[in-house]
Amino acid sequence: MEELLERLIEECRPYTSLGKTADYIPELAKKSPEALGVYVIGSEGRHSWAGDCRQSFTLQSMVKPILLLQALLDNGAETVQSKVGVEATGKPFDAINAGERTLDSRHINPMVNMGAIVMCTLIHGDSYEERFQRLLALTGQLVGDSQVSIDQAVYLSEKNHGSKNRALAYLLKSCGILEGDVEEVLDCYFRACSIQVDCRGLAHMGAVLANRGRLPDSNQRVFPAPLARYVNAILMTCGMYDGSGEFAIRVGIPAKSGVSGGIMAVVPTRMGIGIYSPALDHKGNSVAGIQLLEKLSRELYLSIF
Ligand code: GLU
Image (cartoon, rainbow, N blue to C red; front, side, top):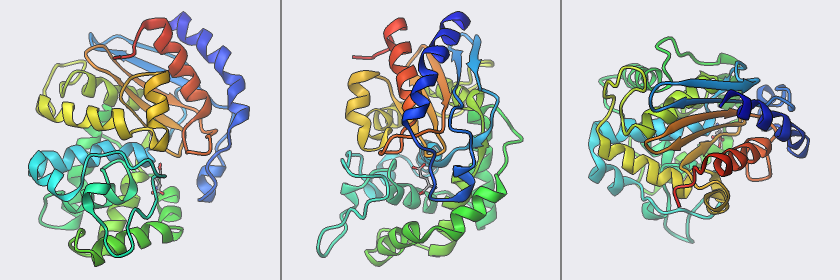
């Protein structure tokens, strides 16, 4: 496995020059665009890695499956689905997916910003701080690091450049889909996006989802198996922004990307994969990261189709 991963890093690194690091906040634009790393954790607990897999970066949209899981754990699938739908939008992640007069919650899903912002309102807890700490604790379990922390510079940058997300949240509020204090909900979303990880953490999270809720090393259950089916299904149809259909054809596994250049991928029953390469295509997906996953999928017959 190590040899294969080393070879794929060599083959895919040139693709980093075809993308651009996200520049909507200065903190992300500072990352080195030629970085490429991969980490794999098999269901039996074996770890393999290659390339720049020790660099840290923020979860960004890869926190969306965690927000969804927390909402499902706290409320059950029926309530979550009554708040936010499960259909792909075919639109960019921050699109204002509204008609002339109404915003229909069935037309958004938890992998686009509007849906993820609503998920923040479904976390249980007596205070905002308690709700956020519960989310952080679940994140720690999923990424296999109980010390998981926030990148303060990215968080402040997200908060100071968050006009679009504010617009989305206030629209949700005006349509009665978002309840509670909008600024507090947005703060939760910005902080959640700014949680720091590395490729190993993403691979660990992928492995828990691949093992349908059990930790790869101890087999301890973090969440019930039906929730893994819910999350993995939505990752398959909506996880790679409005490039999810093409990704399903080229790679064929549930995955979630983020504008930091990470990809968290799930091979049900077999492995979790974490990728980092911050040069993105115009949809917000890592160019070299997708190339690497496509080649890995072919070599190891990973596609579920
Ligand atoms: N913090 C980013 C935003 O909400 C996350 C975007 C992403 O990774 O897709 O705009």
